[in-house]
Length: 450
Ligand code: MG
Image 1: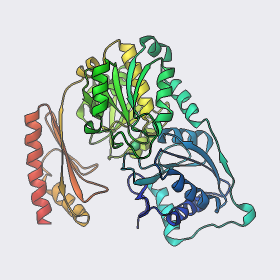
Image 2 (image 1 turned 90 degrees about the vertical axis):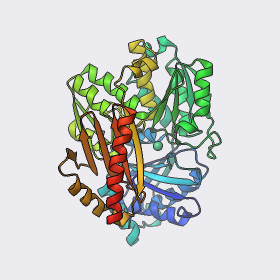
Image 3 (image 1 turned 45 degrees about the horizontal axis):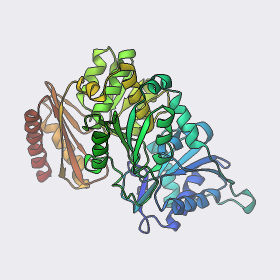
């Protein structure tokens, strides 16, 4: 049995997430850690945050570990604070899920997301109820601490050329999705000398503005604001602000792969080195890195996997196409505000508009499809797929990736849903449709036959 999904522990309030369940989670995590460990705990703006947090804290304290509560903070701020001041961290967040959900993300002492092997240890304590309940005089200590958000902002400022950014006096349209970044990004931008036009920057766990996933349909107000105000750019965070999605001054929504490639190019230009990204990333990433003599290392899909690989390889940059960028000089996790500061720095250094910088990148077309496939069929489907495509140029690091001349298709089972995903990319729209359709047919036939 599993407790942790790909994004920590998630559940609906009043259904999976009851006080009883959460106390036991706290007890399991506390029992997994040495007595006296210092646990940093923070949360996003969800209405259930206090209820979830206090239940988890109660469980933790009962096992003889100490808790430092830093209040509402973006996930990357909790990660940074854990790395600097704690032995372990917990972010109470369900990222971009609807408001009735909440979740727990466990953070290792180095600020990275907890590796799977460690999650398994917590799961085994949880399911066996093998808790370490300490005596009354050994119950852990609780402390609430302010200043984590300020420390986080200062850390970001230390990694960019503040003076150069300030000189440009950028106007930034900002959408915090009523989430944790309400407490950080407006202040960060102020310190970068920007004029801030804000929407949904008041914390509100009902998410009155829009759903907290920064998809184009949720950012219509921000698109409008950018166009009407003549802002230099727009930026939107998801609920826990580990990601940032950008809008250029023309009001174009920039998919995450564009900003990933832009930052990638700037870093590659300066120095070669190693760059890490999942197999699902646009080939623009690799083209740009190779042009400047760098090396690309591919991983399976998932930000924690990218982060671990970056540590192992001593990489200088990494990230995913959904707007999650990792800057190792700062910390080994996705960080939305850090990405924003870097984009502003790139605009300041190059003296160009965001649209110009984006249009200078090679242009590719992408398509994503999914087809239904029961979880218990997934392995067999993958085996058949590998067999059937063995004469093509394939890579099997994560699912099957078929690589052609200036195009590729990735077919992989979803880790969370009963579906197979197909990702395709090519030089033009017609081609991408054609190849996606071709492999969709093959996959469908195989799924039916299993
Ligand atoms: Mg998130």
